[in-house]
Image 1 (cartoon, rainbow, N blue to C red):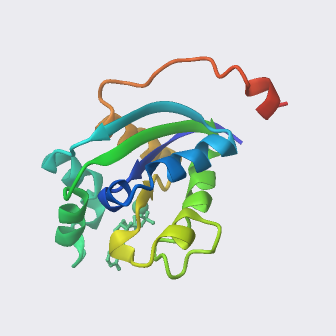
Image 2 (image 1 turned 90 degrees about the vertical axis):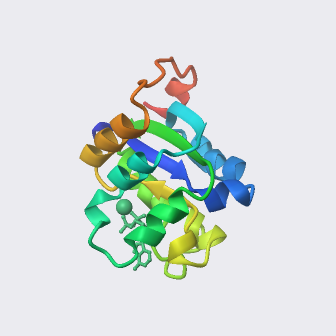
Length: 150
Ligand code: DAT
Ligand code: MG
């Protein structure tokens, strides 16, 4: 499994509901490496660019408005297979279909308030990271790595 990065974001509802610690904790406990983190007041152009593939959808306007409705917590997580693994931790797009034990399955009920984003492919992990963190990532040694990786 290849080393990758995933762009993960606690959406404004997650921040307002006080779920930031709960959500970050799940990624930390899994063992992935945090490479960037900020509380962020999203510029409109960034929100529109992030969701540009959905710009023809009927819910696009509401989606962008929702993402701009308050600060987000923007993060980049690194690890072997982190993109697919993060999607599993996050759960299905519609929280009513998300399995219990997943973030959306445990913490959300509506697709328009599904508390978290995670990149859907390694390429999009790179693309979204460049969009949200043009300042770059933090380089550091995770000293417990030998306890996580053989
Ligand atoms: P995901 O966030 O699971 O990657 P996506 O990329 O297909 O899902 O869509 C991005 C976001 O758009 C999703 O988190 C919530 C919103 N969305 C998707 N489908 C929707 C729908 N049918 N109605 C309203 N919002 C929707
Ligand atoms: Mg998506």
